[in-house]
Length: 424
Image 1 (cartoon, rainbow, N blue to C red):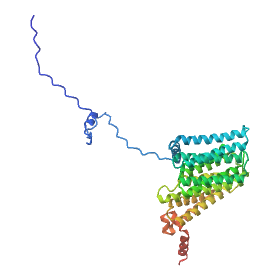
Image 2: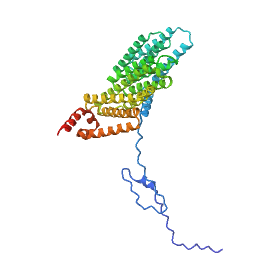
Image 3: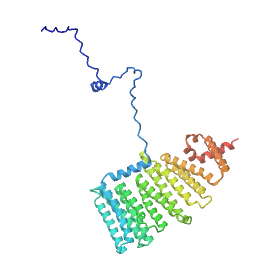
């Protein structure tokens, strides 16, 4: 058998070179700390270029509702959550117990009220004794105890008629003063929020759908007096917003359901009192925050108060022809007078607050015109107002520094303008 001849050996094929590393491998191969090379090769026709990296978007601005929701979440989730939640559940449970006992139980009402009151006193005493060892726990107990005392006195006054109104309001005033003193002495903002929330919720939980609105608003006036007293010493914005939301929120709910024109004489004074109190709270907050040179203007309270209060005022004066116009004019003059007084006393320390009050006063004085006059007179009055502002601004150079300097120096500007006009 013939031997097979091996095939002719041609030139050996070259070994295929290793494939070029991928961009990811090249990126990983770069030593740490060295800048990565920039791929400057042109992009072929038809190929898809990699999208450029997106710039970081700034965070969305937070609103007042977001801040309130965050503060509520931090209050429940921070510190001793179990104790705070337990105090809230205990307060609601006692409120429903009093209401159920009023409707169904046969236990003497004196015994019911006394038992609940002793429980509130026990919480208050225990919280005071633990204030140095367990601060947050003690504040929660004290706040719950004060809220239970508010609930007990209001139930004894409104549900069972066990206390005369004057004596009951005297007790409520004493508790409000005691609560404010305890919160300020211990520098306990959580305690203040607890007793304020419990105090505002007490009449709502103990309500039977009947009763006097004068008693309700008088009770809220005492609670707001306590908040105003705390604001004299502490700049606690959550406490101020708690009182503001409870007062005007419950007031709006009551007005939408129960208000009638014959209640005007008994509701108008309380609206003026509440408006004046929270106007004072906003000023006190600015005074306490001004030395820190940050956030010394509570815009939620400063601008939210006139909007809500004037909306309620227009509801009260719907039966009067020029009621809304007179109300807007009075509010505008009140803000203008307060702005001038604050500027004269505090100078530029409260500049932002004074300018805010000046703007609010001008707005309310301006919108009072169409509420009282027809379209032609409104156009003429607004044109006259604009011309007066232009003349006022051109009278002195001080007005070009801003409306605040022009407004607060108006006596000197008027004298100088009269002198320039009378000069030959």
